[in-house]
Length: 151
Image (cartoon, rainbow, N blue to C red; front, side):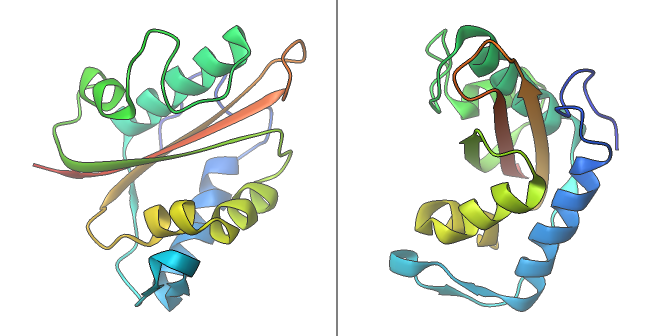
């Protein structure tokens, strides 16, 4: 599991912990509020280009002090994923800001119907996650998870 330098918020092995938590949900299925219930599905596997795209977006948000799926250059997650070298059929993105632990991030995403649905979507096969911190920014810690399925 390659990790872009400076994309772990100083949390040792956070990507492995996050993978374990989200794949545990995928293994047992989940109810995602207005998006409905999702049956158990296959585990996601780590993807370096997706992690690179996620790191780019987290760094952008942390350094420019904003929180949005749209990059400061107007880019979408799909554009960032393509630019990182991943040829996708479908993609999704979850972001979070201010949480200080993997458990807080995953709990927040699972409590949000749209984020939960992204995590549980059976079409997704790959994932990359990043967290970038900046003590001078509003939220300090900026998390991005990019999910996708290849062409």
